[in-house]
Image 1 (cartoon, rainbow, N blue to C red):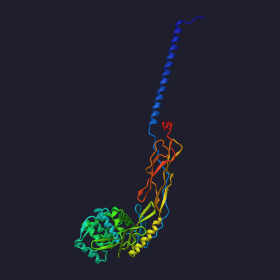
Image 2 (cartoon, rainbow, N blue to C red; image 1 turned 90 degrees about the horizontal axis):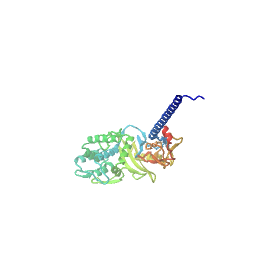
Image 3 (tube, rainbow, N blue to C red; image 1 turned 90 degrees about the vertical axis):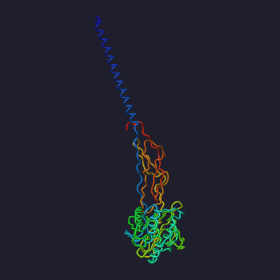
Image 4 (cartoon, helix red, strand yellow; image 1 turned 120 degrees about the vertical axis):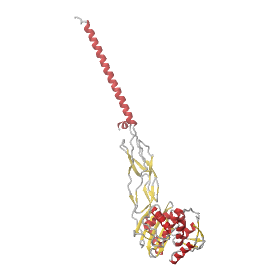
Length: 421
């Protein structure tokens, strides 16, 4: 066999060597590319994993609930209404037009003056020294057949005693005396009283030419007088005075309350009224206990009855029928589902439940919409029994929140789900 030339052997080895180096370079390039891709993928995956989880808001599972229909014994009156402290006006009947208030106007006088010169329980307040002008006011009302308490020039009487005189025996003259003392004149008082009643939402009430209500120019509606009654009972001094069956004044002596239902059927006041133009009017407040833990202060009014006695009797019948329309209801039972969390990383929803029963005193015909605005959003997993906020309803003017917890554990999302999403 003839051997190959030597130069051809060298070229072949060089070719093989070059081919090997090229393959190594390619493998290195592929390896580097794979490493770079893996590093970039890891970095991107880490970025995706480190991003905040989505906020999972609760979905409300409760709807508005209604409880029965109210049945009331409405009096034979031009207008009547019923309400309760914290509930506002619950029902109305009769005329929506403003009617003369008679002596119920004295509550406006008392509240307006106390707004400027407030008193606390046990405080007598300023001492008023009465003058001949106050005696003239007394004589004027006496000649008109108004309700009066005798006074004399030089008499000294405290602010608290004047309030007693105008709210217990309903002295017309002391209402004007107090208004003029506080505001300088009846016209200035009228301006202040108008502003005050409007601040209470009594938008259909007009303050007339006197502070006593004997003039028919002071008018209001049954709706507005419920708001007035609530405001009066929220003032501790007025609430104390209107519950007194009698009191003693410096000159007038012992005087008696016209509200002869005090102490009956839970009645704690508030004010009677009677005049030729207004007829009989009765604004009353009464405490009604459903049980040892739940008491409601009912406020009612009858306007435009033939006499004061018919107004008082009408108020008693209205109260008797009204209290039957309050009941203690379980809005949500213990363990009741109030909301649901739908987790995007799980096929199962997680329920939020009331930790204990949520109860409230409700008025027949009222609708209740539980408030879930305090419920938290979920971010990731949570254990069974985790606190997620409260459920509330507003009853008797206040909220009664009940804790809400998860009925089962909410699983955390997997690493793959977090990277993927």
